[in-house]
Length: 83
Image 1: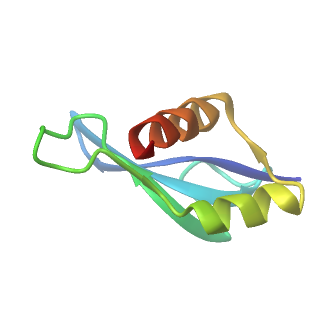
Image 2: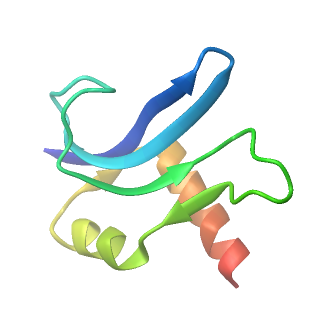
């Protein structure tokens, strides 16, 4: 099964997450199929906190990829920001 989930990056006490499409059996920060965005939870007002490639997101959801609950919440936040 293919999932859309977060992969952690950044440094200690400075998290940064990539939104990736990966096989469910791989590790959280392991191999992934495609990077479709990022989420920076500690972004300042002048920095972009979330970016998702909507065309790739709709493609992967169209072929059956399931988003994690956290990514679902982030997708809704990004849609609210865009509108």
